[in-house]
Amino acid sequence: MKVISVTLLSLLVACSSVESFGQSADSQKPLASSPQPRKSQESLSQNTLRSAPKSSPERPEPGAVPGDPTTAAQKHYDSALAFSEAGRLDEAIAAFKQSLKLKPEAAQTHFSLGMTYSKSKAYKEALDSFKKAVRYRPEWAEAHFRLGVMSYVLGKKDLSNDEYKKLLQTNSPLAAVLYRIIKDDSFLPDVLQSVSASDPLAVAPRSELEASSNQSTELQGNSTERPANTTATTTVEPIVTAPTTLTEIYKVGVGDILDVRFLNSVSTGRSTLFTVVGGGVIDLPVAGGPISVAGLTTDEIQTRVVNELKRRAISDSAQISVGVRQYGSHSVQVNGLVASPGTRFLRREAVPLFVVLSESQLRNDAGHVVIMRGGSQGQTLDVSNTTALNMLVLPGDVITVTGRAQEFYFIAGKINYPGQKYFQPGITLLQAILAAGGVRQNESIVEISRDGEAGRLVTTRYNLKQIKSGEVGDPKVQPGDRIEVLK
Image (cartoon, rainbow, N blue to C red):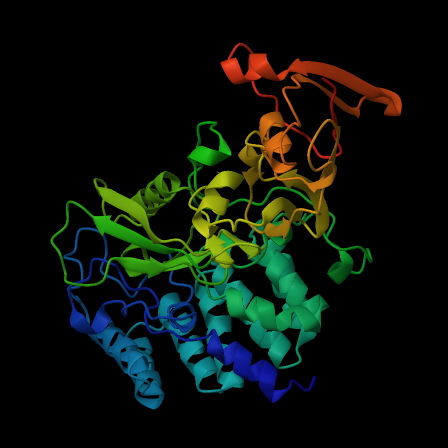
């Protein structure tokens, strides 16, 4: 028997609550309704794996009034859910058992009883309940997954391997998650924190969900390689997106707060705000529990929720509005010579650099901007170069504003105060001459020499009288220019 640490068992329990398993989102019974979303990831773990098939033995058959229990077994089941929500686990277990006496083949009730046993740390009893759940509903991937996890906790690795193989046969994304639990103990805490989501796309990173069932044969004794990449299936209908630029779209991420409103439903007084928590999900009870939203636009989330309501036969004509109330996932860091350094949250997938700098307010002594992306040093941009400031900033970028290195220009000839002068961005020829005390008499011919190709000087002659009269423009001086007043 494999010894499992108290920490591991605690992590498992944290994602094993059953407050709302199998509940219909449109149920009107107070005791059977899904609990309100909470302010942390705890809400995710307390509403886990609600995606039981619509034909759950515990719910009324199609055509029955939602939330109206038709049997004594249903009444005991609803009571058990209410007890579990209140933390009265012993009473919840007793109520589940009463329901099973009347309907012993109810897979959903066995599953919920197993989750309650898990929460109360009765792991052997939980294992037996999950076994019965898969016996009466062999195609239920989530039940197989829980049976595999509980078997691993109790040291029954062979049984865990068997459940892993069954998940592979059903092409379930949960197979990749169970594989990681069995294979890599160090990965277990992260997995246990995220597998509480009912949406398969929310239980592991996409790279894990794209594991190949054909090449993941190590647990079957045929290979020592990790699963290779392939495409995993999901029950969510595909969402087609129109191509657009990054400055026109925003894809939701962890930390964002969404405002989800049902426009053609009577207001229940409940909050319409849902935080995207770890795993990239929102806990949306009306749609059956956690829904994966990370990486989707608000229009795509709206489509996903509508599809989920149709899939669960909850509503075929739902009108939903989804917006971002608070942006918190796309951040950049701005530091250096700005009046307001710190974190800035982007409201698009990409934003021009000048927008971020405008919000942070450049200081007068700012000269250059350096953008670090992906840990590598980016190019250095001049704040006076308006074209360069159109560069797009992406989430995760670190923007550092530095001062301009001291630069000079050199002026000589028939001038009152010749010599090396400090260069200021934007200074013109006439301004440079005035800064040097002006010309001695009425000299009007000036030459500017500056570095050209191959280190050779390029000299241009100007007439000060023409510049003063407006006949020609007053040229800009550049760092390193040599200015000579001739006559």
